[in-house]
Image (cartoon, rainbow, N blue to C red; front, side, top):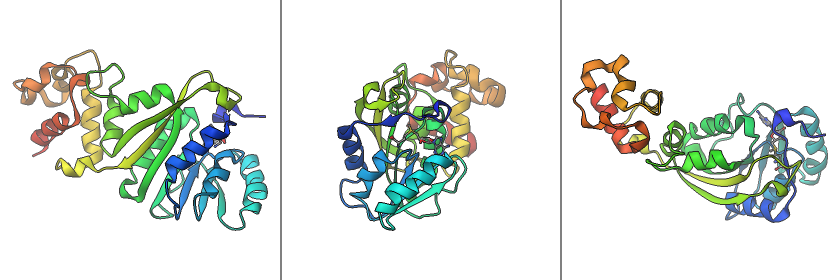
Length: 253
Ligand code: SAM
């Protein structure tokens, strides 16, 4: 029985599983960390392309079954870790490709943890809800653009590779899905931002009320300091990362 609360929609279409595995491992990979392996459908495809797979699964029953079946057949190449991907130290295995068909309820929180690993992520390939994938890859001026777009694009070059229909899963989810590829790219360092988290707090404040112009969102904290800036007369959804960075640098230096 799939546990809907844990976002258990198992991928059953072989061609989709193979495409995800190929995107995660275009060449043979030394180490892949898979988040939410479930019954091991993607894990099997990854094992064919990687020397070692670490699979982090929160559901005890699934983790035990996976270790006994796919793990047994993989003769030491698969390590199943029963853990919560929102809590476990993802840096402990060193540089790795990270992938997974993510549980929808926790997808953005898991992606934020993965992106915080910086260069330890060799590549990230993730299946998420299509609407989330569109928000992550959105450009300034589009409806989907917001804090999540900035937070993710600050740390990686991100591409929406392909869409996946509900029919590819069992049980089928109610929404469409999409596969994203992340290649780490430290834009914060490039733009002279030493404290990435503090910068993201500033960006979150800019987006606090999306319909208001920036000056109104920033007034309570920065008051007159920002009043005369031309950039604050538009909404945050109009502004790209370099302009957020320029404003932030002006405020902290
Ligand atoms: N990879 C499998 C597939 O494609 O068929 C399963 C994907 S299913 C969408 C998500 C999986 O993540 C489930 O097996 C679920 O139990 C697991 N999961 C949910 N929350 C998790 C968490 N916080 N940490 C680790 N695994 C989690």
